[in-house]
Image (cartoon, rainbow, N blue to C red; front, side, top):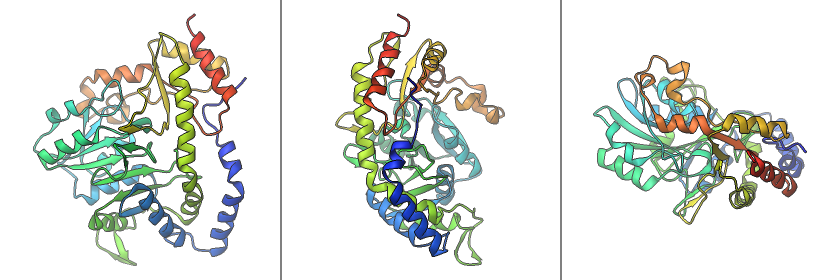
Length: 367
């Protein structure tokens, strides 16, 4: 049997007619940037996230960068970033002209550890980015409490957590602003790149929209040194088709995760922390850890089971950041996670037979 790491086949086959109809509608409207589909999606996604405003943009990375720039954070400023996250979180800070300052994660949740934040705050710190990693929300109450104490902005990187809840509240509504990615593999994915910012701050939303449109609100009038980062009509329209199905897809991810959590039984495997009443995890990824990770990966791949690593090289060891101060520092928890994590199949459409095959293979590893 072969079980891919991810496939969109079942998801897209179920909504193919709606997607084709939407494509045809956008195609024949002959309006492809800043049109009715984008406007409608922004309203619908803001409502989904329980926020007042949503601004579409080109990518999830752009979403973070636009937030940072709109907050007036730039050269000479510092932004707290988890040491265990995709590099885009740090790149957005760098592109805004500010300096990322890395903070270690909690080894059990993989999200930023609030106990480690204050020691990294300086007079130059302007914001904390809380990454809701793998579909689980960060500890937002404690993060926001620290931010309030030091008068810092809180930015949510919700690129992997569409629909996740923290104490009954949707991610995307927990900080000053939140960044989402609609990369195809996300829980809510476009058929190309796309991103969005959610916020309850009207002035911030307007500035973000302008910064993503060449710094302009009125055509050919440019108030800021902006970027070209807009969610196009086609992707917005296709996301509108998908959004009503998101809760259904997330529930299915939770069903799959429950089977993994209850049926994987191997002392060599460290399972992720499941959700609870305070944390509704949407399981963008199901990430296990193993001290013999590379051996496990080869073993599963030979059995036809797709895997990948999120993420094999921590930010401070990336060549792109070799000249940064933090590249000379040690982040043992991030390194431990990078050396042991392995993501196994998690997607809408995986069959019970395939889930059982993955579980049985993992349970037999090393025995």
